[in-house]
Image (cartoon, rainbow, N blue to C red):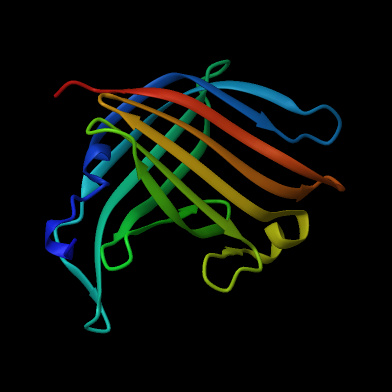
Length: 187
């Protein structure tokens, strides 16, 4: 199949999504926490054709995620990034930063289950020369992110995701997980 005939797998993400069934399993020094949350995810088209070194053809959408804890409405997570489709080799990348001094470039693939359903899976590892994690000296010392994995499933007007962040924190290796289901906000 030529590049021109491939269907952009990211198209289904575009829009504003809301969900209030989030579960955050977070590390604490003594007893780990289960923090229920709600969130908004906004995806927008990047209106440029991206070409790298006059060879690589990319399509991207930018996104912003805002997460609030249900117990006190406190913002617990803010994330800005891009989902990127490499049309040449049909792979997916997710590049994002969080305001704790951590940036991630995760790479992976997608599986089209049907016209309505698609699954994206991306991973990153601190020592991976291609899909890595960069963090501030403080985070490197006190809360080092070692590995990251995210799976997003789109099914029509619903998105669900599961992500795992392996963190070296409080003298232990911890698998920090986040899960939520979101619906597309009506225009």
